[in-house]
Amino acid sequence: MTSTEAGERAIEDEESPPQSSPDDVGGEADDRWQRFAARDTDEDAAPLAATRGQRIRRRIWATVRHEWTIAGLASVMLAMAMNWRVLTDPMHSIPHDLGDPLQQAHILSWSGHALWTNPMGMWNTNVFYPATHSFAFTDTLLGYLPLSLIGTGHEAALLRYNIVYLATFALAFFGAYVLLRQLGARTAGSAVGAAAFAYAPWKLAHEGHLNVLSIGAIALSLAMLARGHGWSMRRGYEAKRVRPGWVIGGWLVAAWQVSLGFAMGVAFGYFLGATMLVTLVVWAVKRFKNLPWRIIIADAAGGIVFAATALALSIPYFRVAQDHPEANRSLDDLDMYSPQWSSFLTSPSESVLWGAAHAPVRDTLAWAPEMSLLVGFTVTALAIAGLFWSAWSLRQRAFLLLGATLSVVLALGTNFLDDGAWTYGLLFNYVPGFDGLRTPGRLVLYTCVVLAVLAAGTLTHLADRIDKYAEEGSIDARWSLSVPVPVRLALFLPLVLVLMEGYSSSPMLKAPEPPIDLAGVESPALVLPSDDAGDYKVQYWTIDGYPQVANGTAAFTPEELTDLRESSEAFPAARSVEALRDAGIETVVLLRNEIDGTPWQYVLDQPRTDSSITVTDHGDVIVFSL
Image 1 (tube, one colour):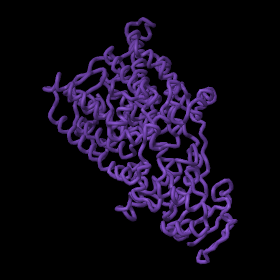
Image 2 (cartoon, one colour):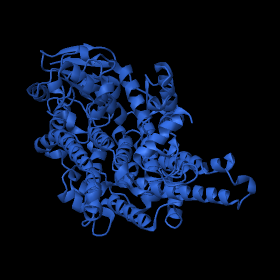
Image 3 (tube, rainbow, N blue to C red):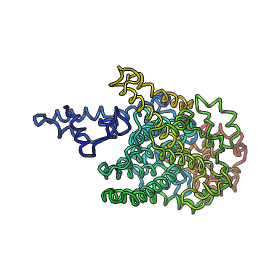
Image 4 (cartoon, one colour):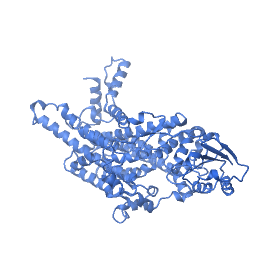
C-alpha cells in the first residue's frame, strides 16, 4: 500500500465507512476524488525510515494530484480560454464597454489608495465632491482590497481589474464544481453544472458589472457549509462527517461574498439565513440528538461574524439613504427593470451562439441588458430530464422544482400576477435591503443554481447506469471491470454545448487616455461636459493622483452633482461662476472636442465678465481657474 492510499484509508476510518460504489459515484466512493480538499495524512502513514524531505515530497505530490488542485487549475485555464481577449492587452484595455468597467477600475483602486493614505476617509472618495459617503453610492468591491494595495496608476488599475475579471469566472466554476461534488454529483455532472453556473448566457449582459460577476463565493460557501455539516444529497446527514472548521470557513467565505457588494449579497444573505433556519428546524425535530454541540457553536460564531460584517458594511448605505433621498428606489424603478416571461428564453446580444437569433425578442424588452435571462438551453434540457430521471430522490427533485419556480417568480418582479404585490413586492416593502435593489432579474442566479443541480443529477444517474451495465456485463463482457475511456468522455459532451452557449463576443476596448493631468490642476475641479455617460472616464482619469472632482458615476446621481451641472450650463456667466465658487469648485476643465451637442457647446462663445478667472488653453483642454 502506498503512503497516499494509507492516508486515504486513515481519513475514511476517521469519518465513516463509505457505501460501496464504482468509480467516483457522487461522494460515495472510497477514493480521493470524492472528497473536496480531504486532509492528507501521508506524513503519519509514511514509514519511520522516510526522511523529512521524502515526506514533504509525498505530501506535495499528493496535493498536486488531488481533485481540488486539478479542479482549481482547470477553472483558471477555462476562464482564460473563454476570455482570451482579456489576455491580449490587460494593462491598456478593458472588456465589454467603457462605462461601468472604468468606474469599477476606479473603485478597485480607491480602497487601496485610501488604506495607504487616509483609512478613516475611505468612504469619502475623491469623486462626487462635495458629497459624503460617496464610496457607498454603489457596490464597493471591498473584498478585493488586498489586490488594491499593489501598484498605482492607470496601468496597474487596468491590470488589477482584468485579473479580478478572470478570477470571477474561475471562482464561479470552481465553487459550483465543489458544491455539486459535495452534494453527490459525479465528475462529469459536476463539470457541466459548474460551467452552466459560471458561463450562463444571462451573465454575458453583465460582463461590465464586476459586482454581478462576483458570485463564485456563493457556491463555494454553500459547499463548505454542507461539508462541515456532514451533509450531501446522496448520503444525507452523517454525524461522524461533521467538521466545525469547514463550517466556520463557509461562514467566512459567505462574509467575504457580502463584502464584494450588496447587489448580489442582499439576496444571498437572506437565502443563507433561510437555509440555515430550515436546517436547524429539521434537525431539531428529527436529529437534534445527533447534532454535535461543536457544530452549533461553529454555526453561532460564523453566523455572528457574517451578520456583523453585513451590518458594518450596510451602515454607510443607510447614511446615504438618509442624506440622499434621490438614491432610494421606488416601485416605479422596480417596474421599469422587471423582466417578462420571454426573458428567460432570451439571450443577451453578447452571446456568439444566440445573440443575433434572439435580437427580435430583445427589441421588445424595455431594458434588455437586465431582462435577457437565458440560463442556457443545454442545462435546461438536462434539468427537465432530471425531474424524471435522476440520481436525486423524488423528494429532492420536488424541492428543487419548487426552488426553481420560486426563483423565477421572484425574478419577474412586478410582472407576476398582481404587479408582484405578493411576491417580490413583499420583499421590496418589508425586507430590509431589497428596497435598495432595482433589478429583480438578477435573482435568476438561483434559478441557475437549481438547474445546475438538476442537470448534474441527470448526468450522475447516467454515469451510474453505465457503471451498472458494465459490472453486469450487459454491454460487453470486456467492460465487466471498467468502462472504456471514450464512453466516460462522452458524458462531458454537454460541457461543450454549455460553453458554446456562454461564449462571449464582447471586445477588449482601449481605455481612454487622460487629456490632461487632473492632479496638476487646483482641486476641487469640475470637468465639462459632465453627464452620466462621460463621467465614467473622468472618474477613471482621477486614478492617477486622485484629485478631488465633482464628477462621478454611480447607481444614482446625487443632488449636489445635478445642481452643479445645471449651474455650469451658463458658464462663464457671473451667476454660474458664483454658484460654482459657493459650492467650493476651484477649477473648471473644459474638454473642447466633446462639448458639441451638449448644454456646454456655447461656453467658449460666451464673454467672460469676471477678470479674476485665469484661462489656460491646452489645445483640446481649456482650464478655467476660479
